[in-house]
Image (cartoon, rainbow, N blue to C red; front, side):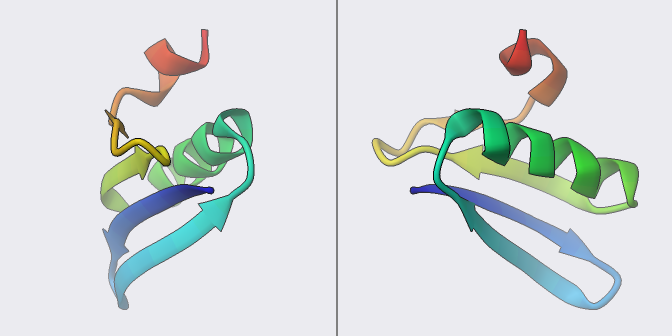
Length: 56
């Protein structure tokens, strides 16, 4: 399970997705919607913060 974490005006955002591709897509959407400090964490603990580069 991949976790997507970040912040918005209401507080903490914490979502989960089954695949890396789905998690990166959701992370990009959150950033576009104005969230900040968004990161994706994979099951091994690796952190993704540059979604455009990682999706390629």
